[in-house]
Image 1 (cartoon, rainbow, N blue to C red):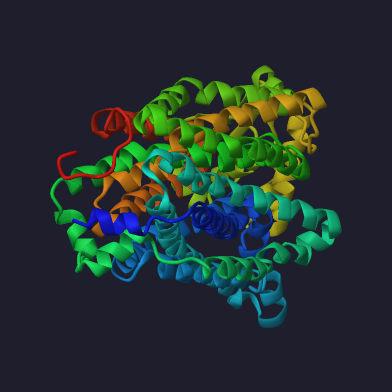
Image 2: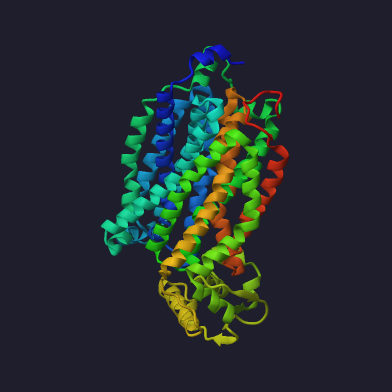
Length: 557
């Protein structure tokens, strides 16, 4: 084991700890900003990089590319976890933040499909999504190494009695990256005219990543190596192969399983539901004004930042398990009511119209395979209708049998032949025609700006989601650091964390979007979060240690 006396001699001063927390947190904010700016601008990027006529399909393609970046996070965790346990914590996350900054700035330089069409022809439009995918892969690899490095670096500098509080700044920094992405987008919208922002101004937030990268590197280069790693290196106790040892170290398989489902699975699905699902819900399904949604999320996000610090500090007293269990239980009880409450405030007219005049889509094609309907480029007529209704934020029910038909409140809607054409004009005609028919039955498809009292209620609902996220996330960096032995800590905590965050969380917007588009119920996507959290709660209850926090030891499972 690492010599305790040698480690004590390396105990950092208060000034050093403040620098460690500041530099690690700032770098994490910038790196998550880089990752989240893509999701924040999803409604613009779908038109910039994807040559499809259907807006719902285009948005699902954006979320699928977003998810692809998350899919590569576990690979980044393996790669950079190996380097972090072999070469050191500091230099590993210097590499990750550099890779992230360069990849993000690259997104701002990709030619749009319109530019490629104009200059090279239809056959070259595939270049844009291919480059986006490549850069998202690089971002995913970088992020896979970032969180573990920053969290461990702070945890290994922090005194045990303050480890939860100090590492909670890393958790708050993740939300801080999301808040920063919204601030930058709002500032750009304010400075750049709306038409110009949609044309070229959306590139600015991506290109700003170069400046943020410079600041991050400047701060992190001032740091010294983790005292725990220095002591291990000098005593010759670093791991020869951290990846292999992560699965062969006694008891580690159980710890990885618990960290994956009982920690990462819970926190990541709640977090992305709180921030990204709410963003998509308010902008898409509820048809709120985009600028209004961004201001609402900015206020709620900023108010929630301090919650992570409160929970982290609380966990130093009550232990790491209790906040996670409380947060998971509260999520299962309140997730649907919170979103129902938001929907009733955001666009009550839409909900009332849907209840008063239900929309029914009938036809044999509509119930054969709705998932294939949504992703098939050559969509059937039913697939086109379903996508257009989903994109308009309209709930519907599917009814088998007969030819394709749409009824609103029992009254049939005449489907014009041009609605079903596989062209941009056909898609526009279909959406306009359906919305016109629905408008006559009381639906309102204009972008909404709710009354101030409703906006306050929506912010309160989002803050409630922020509380759930903080309870299940605030103590996690300390918990995961304490769960695994120092010699393989970087790898052992990064692998389950990023598998959970990469697959269970990263694919959440896509999976939830497909569920909503397939069922016609705008709230049905929440079932994905509910099921993952319910399973994770069982695992956490069984596998997480109870009682006061304690450092890793081989006699503690």
